[in-house]
Image (cartoon, rainbow, N blue to C red; front, side, top):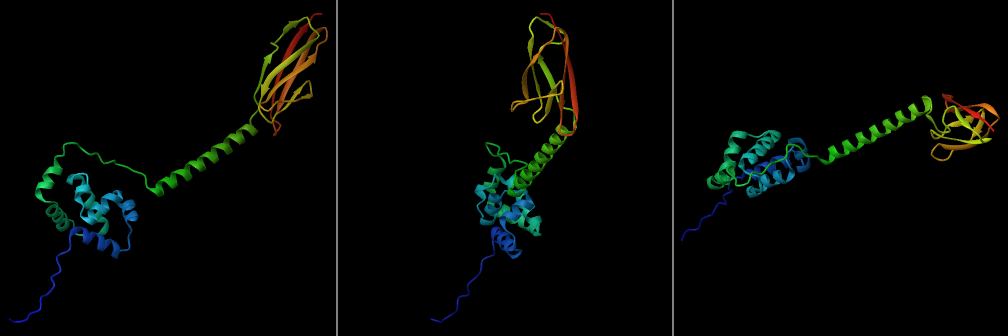
Length: 221
């Protein structure tokens, strides 16, 4: 019996092996490929590992493959044909007419996009707060008097002036400083003289912007 050497024949690389080897040669991670192609990493991995049963039908899978081939700068005509051959005619026909249509979202967020969105929202929130704070300081303060009503006739010698203004405002009644609570409310008792009494209520902001209201009360006692 004659001796002979058997040569080990290397089978032709599969589609998945080609994709994976080219990607690694270019030093590209699956995360980078997902971000650039907008194809989910699990589908890219399924293409590389030949697990075609995990792809959402050949119509979608071919679209994913074409995007991946363009990204890796590979021959689309030859490799899409190999994909169809590897899938098999029976599987391909079954996947082209699925019983339940699987919809692939047109858009999904990557980790980088989430970070960008969070940063943008934080910046907008800070800017909004700055604008609100500047407006609160530079505009005249709010001032509302809930009691007593204008030109009211009273038979008592005292009355409570009740109202509300903005937080951090200086409030004066006839040039007398009035204390506010934590929400800008005030309730100040004042003495009335017989006849017409005029009270000037003044709210002054930190930048000396003023809102002034007058109340006239007729006292008959």
